[in-house]
Image (cartoon, rainbow, N blue to C red; front, side):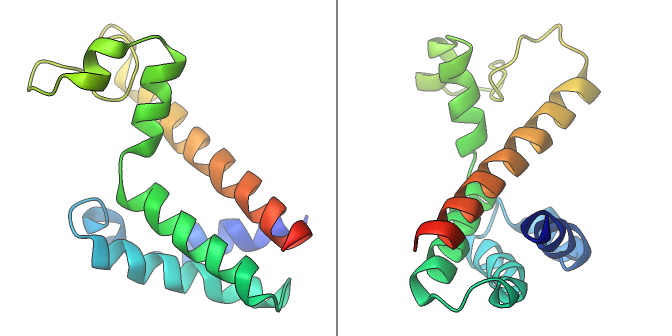
Length: 125
């Protein structure tokens, strides 16, 4: 439960608009967000390796479109996985899926990745 609470606090309360709006465009902003995100996890672990894994994976997940790529694979959407263009839906979902559902599914999947990685890092590193 503590891990979930720290995740929610760090990812939503500590992340400001500048981070949220720019972390996909400039990786140093994703690193800044990941750093502020990781600090509260010191309450759960003193392992430098666990904290580093939480930090670096958070930066990678939030600074890239890795969740989109995982969705493309999951949904057998190999065309948009390998082809880029303005007409390709990049998040791995069909174009007729309502936009609000697509956005929330991406947010939920992003959170699931963070929670799994954080749990494994705290427990085993």
